[in-house]
Image (cartoon, rainbow, N blue to C red; front, side, top):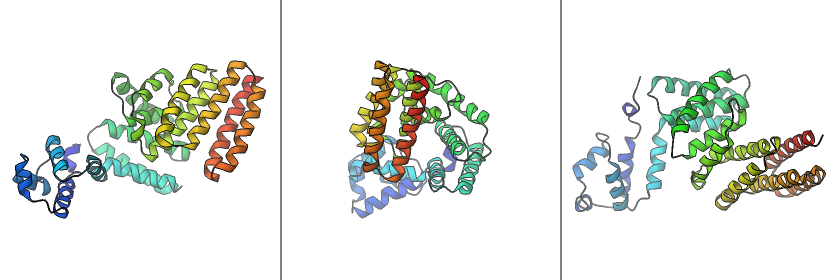
Length: 305
């Protein structure tokens, strides 16, 4: 078993910092004046030593470098992130064969290296998206369930939640293999900084909101619909996302219908939303909206019988 630090993924960070230093013509004496050993910095540049977080913060200030820029450079060096990105690229391109190959490569990497929660989360993401997009991928629901239970066990013990925890819960709602704890989901959402999510996580979060909406309708849970609206209001303020606004509008219409027990009015409202969407959205997004509207109509028809 290879330990993660033995992979030396981040040795290029020192080289990157030195490129910035040279490009900005900052002499070594500035490092000494700020309490940083030039010898230590050069060892980091040469990949001979790791950099302390406190020293990195001072270096960022010396170089007038944003910590975000350093983090993006570190992200490029992460093998786990690289596998995740390649998998998502092939999946989004609709290249089934290459997506399977990237998944197998990740499995080999996962099995030969030490355990981390991050790697477990990426494994689950790949399993769920492979299964939902390629039914001949060879992934068994039982395998996905085993991974899911491991993550839930760790999550339930946690007191702090991150973006990838939210992504996991969003993915969990897609297959719903194990029981979905909506109260726990809302707790996590309220403790995660949605502003920091990336594009891939944003798309998964949108699916998550769709499934929350459908789950609330199926269970006639007005409180959950109100919570979904609150989440979307916060999300809209950060992302300016029209598609998410449509989810909120549908949710509000569903909530009113459940409260008044009047589904005929809801059907009319859903038709208006569909008509308006035809002028506002591209074909790809319109297809998602129509799919969501049809699923809502189907559940409402069931409830109205």
